[in-house]
Every structure is written in C-alpha cells, then in structure tokens.
Image (cartoon, rainbow, N blue to C red; front, side, top):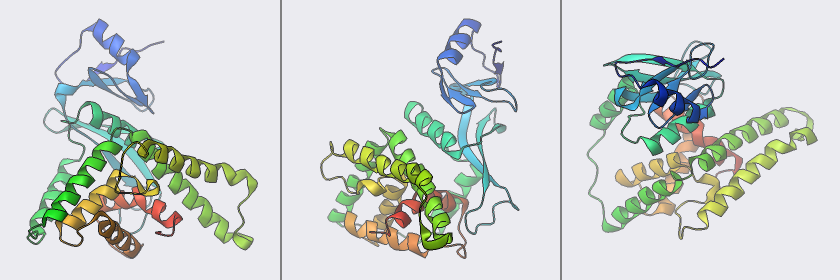
Length: 286
C-alpha cells in the first residue's frame, strides 16, 4: 500500500504532482529529495511527510551521542538525525541508522538547492561568534590569494562527485576501525574475511584518482581529496599560517595530529575531524 505523504508547512502540492514527485525522488535511507519537495520519514514509514523547498529554512545533520551527550572530547558512538527547519523555527527530525546516508542526502541537496542552509541556527551563531573572536586576518600576498583561488576551485571540482569523497571518508573510517581491532589481536594480523574492508579503501582511492586525473595540478593527493581538507587548508592561508598548497596541507596535518581525546573541540570541529582524520591516520600523514 502506498501512503500519500503528509503535508508539513503551509504550502501544498497538487495530488498528481505530489505522487509523481515522491515516486521519482532520489532516496537516501528513509528520506528522499524530489524535484519539488523534500520527503521526510516518520518513525515507521519512509518518506511519510513532504516539505516544498520554498517552505524550508534549513536542513542539517544533528548528532546525539549515545553516552551522556556530546562531551566535546573524543569520538563516541552516536545517533545521526536529519533535521528540516520550516515555518519560522519548527523542526522535523528523522532518525538514521547510517550517518553516511545523511551526508549523501545533504551533499545532493547542496547540488540541487544550494540556497538552503545546512547548519543549525545554533551552529550558525557559534560560527559567527568564533569569527568575531578571531584576530584580524593578515593582508594576503598575491601568491596566497592565488592559492586560495586554487583551493576554492578544487572544492568546486570535488562537489561534482560527492559520492566519491564520501566513500573515501567512509571506507577510510572502516579501515581504521579494522586496523585498531587487528592491533589488539595477536601480532596484529588481519583475517582474510576482513580483506574486503581493505580492498574497499583501496578501491575508493583509485576511483578518486581516476576522477582527478582529468584535472591538472589538483592541490591534494587523491588519498586526502575531501572538501573538509580543502576548507581547512583555506583557513590556514587566510590566517597567514601558510602561502602555498603544500604548506597549507602540512599545517592541516599538524593540526589533525594534535587533536586527540583530551582536546576539547566544538561540534563543528568534531564533525570535520570525524570526516577526514582516518584518511590521514591510515596513511601515517604522508
């Protein structure tokens, strides 16, 4: 039995348009992205509700830590949610089993509807406060400005294939967990049944390499090709900590090395570290 999606917000789609849009929407776990609306899940049913894009204020990921909430220290087991904000602050929250599906939906939504904010109001306020607290940025040299332009162009390239950089991140995290478990066993040996996890990480890198081979002088090796890495590099340039892409990447490596379970970080920093640190750890920061 096919249920008619329940309207959220004030704007309604015509019945025939709604049925066709829901049927053809691109699914990411229990939710979907259509041409006319975002489809959100209930506790039991996928795509149970719909929100036309004109009604949406922001769509973002919310992480609830399974033990005691977000402590700002370390990385713990978590429960991911997709949250849509509409009607001046009302929210619809959808539970996910797999965080990467939330990331995939948000990446696709960014491509199709870049005007929709993807950070919560509280997160936006924290970012603004952090920017106000930052010391005045130094005047950049021509070389530094050229580097910034190169990094932003590279970010645009990666956003053409979010599936590749998300898989690069996810497979790296799976490999990291495997290696940690293997290190706890005798001799650190990897069992043959776990070989597919290693193969997956290799395959993700090779697919990224093939994609980037069509772009000359990409400022990152394929093993680290993720927008988060590029944005962190951009911030090092803007802060006057580096001038060239090579220098910026080395600063990013040093910053990631310095982050461990004893270092207190913001939710935004936590999300960035989760996305990319495993890629660097697996490669021993080479």
